[in-house]
Every structure is written in C-alpha cells, then in structure tokens.
Image (cartoon, rainbow, N blue to C red; front, side):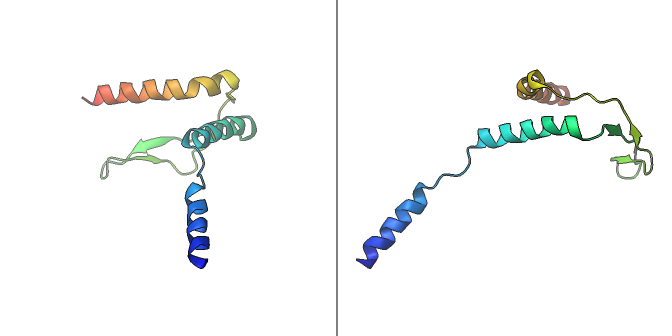
Length: 94
C-alpha cells in the first residue's frame, strides 16, 4: 500500500507544470512597459576605456531626458522589432 501511495505522489509531482515561457516573457515585457510610465527617464554620459575596450559610465553625469512611455501598440511591436534588430546586428558582424 505504501509503495502505491509513493508512486501516486511521484506521478502527481511529474504532472505539475511550470510557467509557460511565452507567458513569462510576455509578463516581463508588460511590466517593463508599465514602468516606463512610472520611472523617471534619464541618461548617463559614457566613454570607452582604452585599456579594456569597454564602454563605461561617467560618474555624476546623469541627466534627465524627456519621457517616452510605451503604450499598447509599442508592447505589441516590441518582439518583432527586437528580432529585426538582432538580425541586423548579426548581419553587420559578418
């Protein structure tokens, strides 16, 4: 009887589903779009470090910039635009 209960418990654990990856990505995109309405927009100056070749932020150089909140249409277009930009970057590296 105990073996049957253990097998039943294992079967139930196997049937548990994790969050759908598309739902997870969509939730992150919607959250990021909502934050564009709440968080202040700003920008830092940057310079390229000659030793490492990395682009670094200049401390104390933060400047506010005009807001550009993302609406519903921007949310819907974010994935196709991101895919197109990634493809363009990949092609430019060749």
